Image: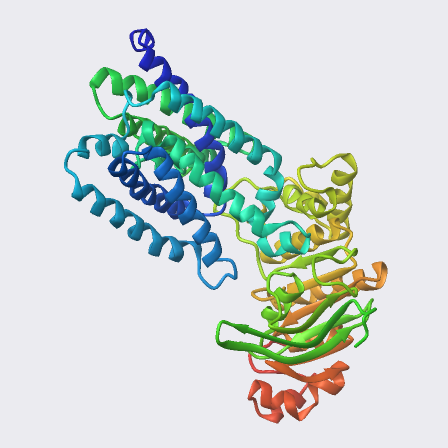
Amino acid sequence: MMELLSYEFGQRALAAGVIVGLMCAVLAFFVVLRRMAFVGVGLSHAALGGVALGVITGTSPLAGAMTVSLVVAWVIGWLTRRGRLTEDTAIGVLFPTAMAFGIALMSLSATYRQDLIAYLFGSILAIRTADLQLLIVLAAATLSLLALFFKELVFMSVDEEAASAARLPVTTLRYLLLTVLAATIVASIKLVGVVLVSALLVVPAATGQLAARSMKSMLVVSVMAAEISVIAGLWLSWTWNLPSGSTIVLVSATLFLVAFVSRRRADGAP
Amino acid sequence: MNESAAITFDDVWFSYDTVRTLERVSFDVERGRFAALIGPNGAGKTTALRLLLGRLRPTRGRVLLFGSPPGRQREAVGYIPQRVTVPRGFPLTVFELVLMGRYGRLGLGRRPRRPDRDAAVHALERVGLVDLAGRYFETLSGGQQQRALIARALAGEPQLLLLDEPTAGLDPAARADFYNLCCLLQREAGLTLLAASHDIDAVAHHADRVILLNRTVLAVGSPHDVLHAPVLQEAYRFPARHHDQEHGHRAPGTAPS
């Protein structure tokens, strides 16, 4: 680990990892509560279309990913506004469409395929100073919003109709959550990759849910699980020269397994 | 139309895209009444409640709560759904659920304080669940969960409670228990209640006004008048002998209370 930290790119990757872990873990709490795991998968894969667009046009891939993810997130919000279409169905339509768009663009240019591999599976070498700065701004904005409206988001996630009756701005809160989800996915793409970022939006909270006895402790355990996953995953990625996304997610899944087995033992299951 | 009523539907029409679910719906519910909204499946009961919650907007006509459009009224409104399902194993306690009833009063971004926690405890006392405040919501029985949802609504100090099939899935004893509690709250706190229900027996025993809906309002009046109206048979498509026996208002599939 000390060797990794002796390089500037290693320091940037670790700083980015700690921030990404915090963002994903807090958001994962709502992803689990609202059963939005498939929305997370869909938005992250839809971001691939934006990455491809950015790479092909020579503009910023992250800006492309952000644009496409936000558009897809808001269209999901619009399609599901009356409850006539579920979030899962809406994302089931939009996610393959945006991903197919990305694959078609990728096929047009073989030159950029190596760049795209890094976006698919994450790379420890990919974080530049500008990326870190963007990540800090996104994290500050998304975490502030989640902290400010935490109780309203929990209420809406448990019972939208009752939250409406209490005159909470449910529609605005739904769009806010989708926007924050899209922003977090884009912020995490370089380190974890399009394919695996959705795991960080579920697994730490699932671990927290198994290990905790209250919503507060679930949040704390989720954040701890995410941070351990990111730090240990980056170290493994450096040591074994593996894509950082895969090592981070494998550590995260191991922590989940430990929590699952411990919980079964605590509950007295055979 | 009586605009000082707790609830006003004034020539309301509503369509989901091209499918019309409500047309020419007009009725009102006076303050302090316990009104029941009955009708067969697909009659538009849930749509009517969603209009009252401000989740939908009428295609035509006006929906008013205490004389104002839903969401703009000064009076607090509580909502009790058929059920609330949290993900299995999610550590949401009964107290945390009931405290949510205060969030509408608190304002955006403001944290609950001592008076809010006291109000939640008081609401739990009123429904007899204070001893279960620390239990996970998902571990309660169906009847206890409905009581917790009443407590959540009461914590917001509402003047109107909207109930959507609140006793579906409960056994007869739990159903009677639920409606008795509602009637007690109506009398003690002067609450107005509107319950969308298939449970015609419970309606006959507890509500003081019944609205029979089947896309449009077929009858409005006392339980006796509406449940003996020939139009009830047409709406539910059951033979007359069923609703004149025993308790006088028995529909197929509903147990006597």
